[in-house]
Length: 237
Ligand SMILES: [Zn+2]
Image (tube, rainbow, N blue to C red; front, top):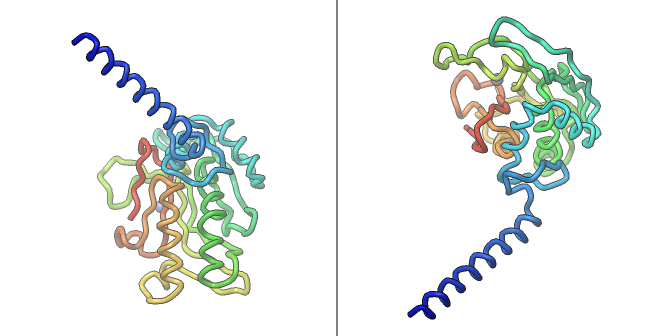
């Protein structure tokens, strides 16, 4: 009886060791899918990418190192404080990314800038090439920082915009001048609408909140992207 019990115990220990070893090997090939590995912009976007980016809200130096690695040309904004609930300490300004300009320049938290970098490289430009055969050269935005509560939300809840931790994207210009706008093209059938839905869906892996005209009427003319801390979950509509 004792023999059988110790053999079974040994079997369990071997199985547990094999499981740990298998997980370790899998994790080395998929660091983007594990919550405790450091973020690298060279990795594919994975299950925990937006969680890691949003977590950099508390570590401006680490976030800036990643922006430097990405060779993003950005300026550091002086800390802003306005009233009790508004302001930011990790603001950056982006005028020009690798491939396109921001109009007006994007004044955003560092984690939003990281999300935009990944979005551009892994979602926007591949989608633009696939649907139109040319790249995006300009992103039109309605701005980022605004000291205000969530519109249409419960009273007293502050928007991520009040910490520059969000950006509202109105549309895109392609090389050659073609213009794609959320207000005009979302509801139409066609490649512009397909492109807009694809870039909305793609943003969900690198931003913690993505709101589009599908969410409510307040978002009928833009995509809202933010890096609210959600503990690894994203909210995409
Ligand atoms: Zn917004």
